[in-house]
Image (cartoon, rainbow over all chains, first blue to last red; front, side, top):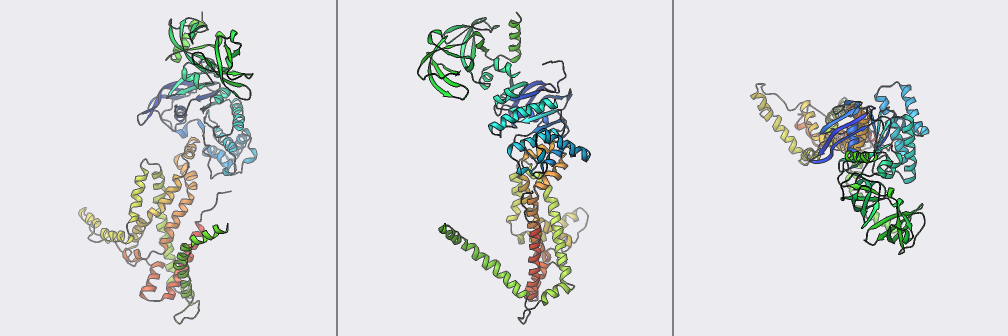
Length: 365
Length: 269
């Protein structure tokens, strides 16, 4: 991402507490126009709080929130150029679909014919053209979701905030709405900030992900960056499936875990520094015992449709999750194989900035 | 299946007996009385008199007029109060303070006002001390309306509060998010979404207000004559039960009309 563009939203050291409970701790980040952002984290991590601070439903105790370069801490919610799609839709039950979508434009005193055109355009965008005169109570969950999106977009916001909007939908509908939301964002070219606790959803939809935990941003980056280079135990565990074991970084490009030394691609740490090692289940291959870097016993196997999820135990009683395309036999002794590029090493308590600097220091060589 | 219906019928006995003895039979008696004269002959003369005499119709209008004023004032106070109350932190406590006076007997509260508003009462003492002199605060229209509003306020406030409280807070957030000022949210969402509570409140205040009679005597000093006080007069003073019953039937009819117009309608199509 080109950092020279003026960010549409910027948080500078923003903090918020409720009853001595720190919800957000000194959070800083920038949001650029026209991208699909996701705030990803478990419940209580502070991701919805960030959304409420942007929309103006909450105000920060500390720090500055900037919109188009101007501080907006004291601008009331109704005057901000952002709109929200709420988790439970929050549609107005006393109004028809049309009146729900027309609510914002009417408040702006748009001429009647323009309101009509706007509502039609928005309903077409979410594929609900024929539903104008329906009552909210007559709609299915997915249709309500679409009306909520149309209503928020009818105000022509610069930034659309989406607070776990798909969590109440069933799996198939959710998948469909994911790609539709992505298409809508691409077509309108406005910034989307999407909040979810579903890592799969975040990876599938986002240009850029912020991973939240404990009131702080743990890591931010593209889905691929975050998946391939998790910065700490929390991120590695939260994004995708992981095998995480303790190890020691003996020297640059040499890590030791489960009492064996392995070549890897990480560097820039102190000699013999204790680290955590991540191996993704899909990067592990089951091979005959004599070809394996590790020898394990298959303990459990379950069919997951497109792959088999296998749990194997090594001689040190470490558990290894493996995703294999072919079935194995429970109780069989097999080898585990992986390459140097499959080993990802994480330092304890390394900040994002330090992580970036370290990667740059040895990748530049 | 059959046992089930029998059991249901069995459990309905107390209610049906109550209904029969205290509702159906009295109304039947009222109807009978209103349709007969002192000689016991069937006649419509009572209703004829109600419509043609220059006493009863104005009295009926009077009743409706005062009931409307009392209802309007309680609503104007209750709706904003209920809205504010629903957003307070310690709302259960505030609500308690509003409910509490309803546990005290109406007569006691009325006498309390007699004491407060009398020539030598607390308020006149205060006026005198401040140099405004003493005034006749009792036995006029204003004092009647004031005390009636005080007594009926909780019955307007509670149903409105309940229905406002049931509105999903996210709906109000969404309204603000879409650019609505508080006044827009109030008129376009809070008011229509609490309409059933408002109707219940109007029923609970307007209907009893039609037949107020004790207050008219004690606080209104008989300057206000309503259908309620007329019924009292006919049954107790003039002993003309036939006319009294006729007025009562008219009153019941007025109540039924009010109920019809403030009934809860199903979800809008």
